[in-house]
Image 1: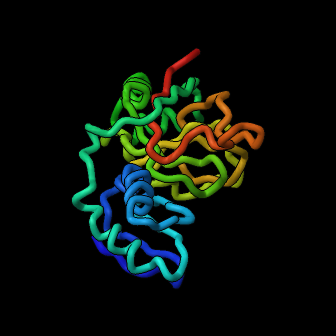
Image 2: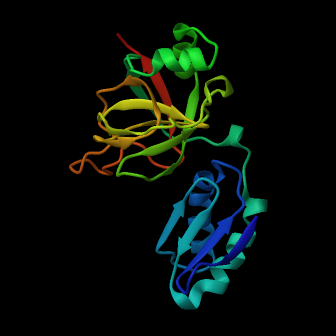
Length: 206
């Protein structure tokens, strides 16, 4: 783990284990508040955490961030809101995923739907959440040829992540299902259904 300035009004922690940053976000806010620092934003990514702050607070923020190793909590002890997402396992790549993983389609569905995921970070598009926890048996590299259009609500997997496309967009993930759940709604507070740290389960429906 390394803590360093990230420009004059931000600090970054890198070298974190995948998914750790989302769990540390609230702790960073609490610790900075206790130290008398009003952070502007705390943004988790796969293995990094960026904190934006006033320029004169940089050193104090980095002192707080340097204590993250001691502040970290085992994943098994962490709790968050649970969101259940109904899924029809009708994706156009489902059979190919089963073949590539040397599994039956039924086994792919069972593995994907019998797992609890956590939102590691958000990016790519508003409402697009990267979910960690994908069983190792289902981990495949991204498609060699991305599609120019992937439908909104497509449930997909790639590498160690699963995700739901919040709107129609290009995409190179393997499509295994679809959902009617809205990932992004500007009239909802907050607009994104899934936030970093949220627990997620996919529920198979017909």
